[in-house]
Length: 157
Image 1 (spheres, rainbow, N blue to C red):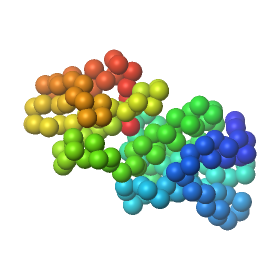
Image 2 (cartoon, helix red, strand yellow):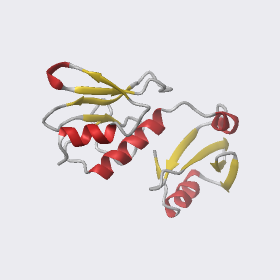
Image 3 (cartoon, helix red, strand yellow):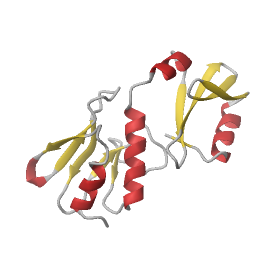
Image 4 (cartoon, rainbow, N blue to C red):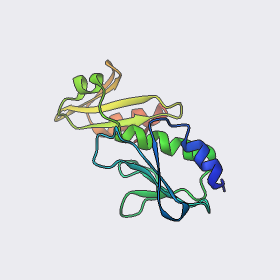
């Protein structure tokens, strides 16, 4: 298990997070640029090493009813990955994303290198995968698109 100081050091690698000291020596970190009302990314990081990260929109994590993941036993790499994904999920859409997605249903997918692809349902029966402004692939169903992304090493944010 990482110590409180080690977790703090990793969290401080993310300059978009702002530290907020709270009671009993605990620390929160806010993401003020969040596109959501949810701004608290790291919640109650305690000197004993326990704490939580908001992962409400993320897949593959055991979350409580508030979307929080307990990070007590996370490794350094696991914590970095979770923080990257949590911030990406809360980030406002870029100009590129807005141009591509508009009001269409979309999902962000990420690989282990942090590259993000966007899956967009542009028509009732057509799913497109974009890398930035570039169309990466078109699929007849969500299942086909998700299978392609999975095979390419991406997972849903």
